[in-house]
Image 1: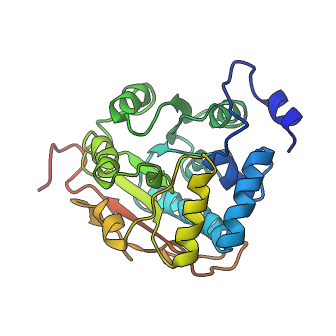
Image 2: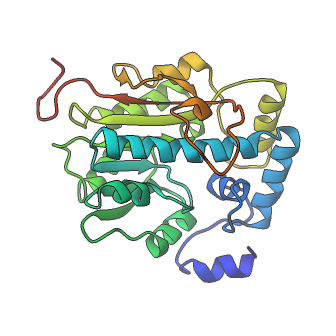
Image 3: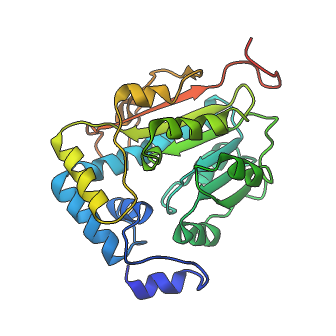
Length: 279
């Protein structure tokens, strides 16, 4: 995708910095998309040269998200989804997967990148039985997210919160936990958290992350397995628990399920829906 096409596709009022790489656009590049600029491709290539497994990681997280949403809609009966840090639209977005199972599903996407929001509003449309909305907010501001999401979601009913490969942008671990807790505490029992994030695994991965930070992009904090498990504190993990994302309820996918250094899980908020707390 050239700069000219990007500029044409995005409203002129959007403030898009094409001089600094952005994680959503780099992720789109690794996934084979078209919504990126030269600076994003350069940063993505540099990362991949140091840590070639990043493309497999991007694919594995995408298919973990798809399996998690199918589970939540088809088996857990969830009809409301809050997808925070959604990234650029791709094949099988959250609302498409959920509404394929239950057309009445309601989805709110949250991001603070103007390119992501412009593409979301242009390309993501709900089935008439359900609803989609798009919130411009930083995940560090859960109160702002919840106020906007309440236009579409009913917080008296269970909600699934999706955080796919985004919490590493919050470098301080306690602050990252506050993002999760600040959102989940508002949702009633029977709600779910689906989360994936990368762990520190090997010198190449760590070096790639350091090189990425040197590009001027927002750094991404690699965490320990215990820290990622900690995000699910107070919740009931769905089997098989916190595992590498390619091992979470695998099913046939267009790409081989190669090992990746990213953990993921789905967990339920204890208690019965409609009740104020756990039994």
